[in-house]
Length: 153
Image (cartoon, rainbow, N blue to C red; front, side, top):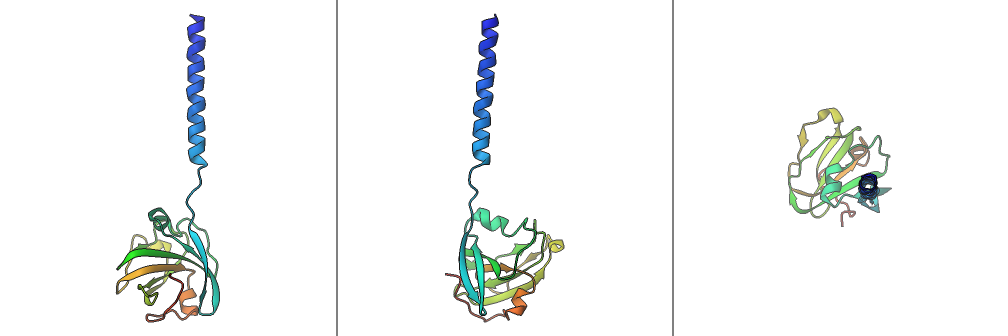
C-alpha cells in the first residue's frame, strides 16, 4: 500500500513538474516584435516601428505610457481601404495619419484621446498605411492631405 502511494506521489510530482516547465516555456517565449526602420519626415529623423502582423496591429501603441517625439508606428495594409482606428487600451493621446498606396497623406486626426474610446476614426478616402505619432507632431511637421513621404515602402 505504501509503495502504491509513493508511486502515486511521484506521478503527481512528475505531472506537476512537466506542467510547470511547459507553462514557463510558453510564458518566456519571445513576443513578436515589430520591425524598426529610420525615416526622415519633414527634415527630422524618425524611428518607426512597423506593425505588420494582425497581433501587432491590434495592439498598436496600446498600453504605452508615453511616446517620444520623432517616433512613430506604421501600420501597412495589403489593400487600400478606409481603415478605422480607435483608442482602445490607449493611455496617451496621439495623432493618426492615413496615407495612400503612394505614401501620400489622405487624412489626419490630430490629438486623438484615450477618453474618445469607443469612437472610431476613419479617413475620408482609402488608405494603405496608417502612421501613429505623438500628439501635435502632425501639425508641427505640416502634415496635411496631399503631402507625400517615402517611408512607407
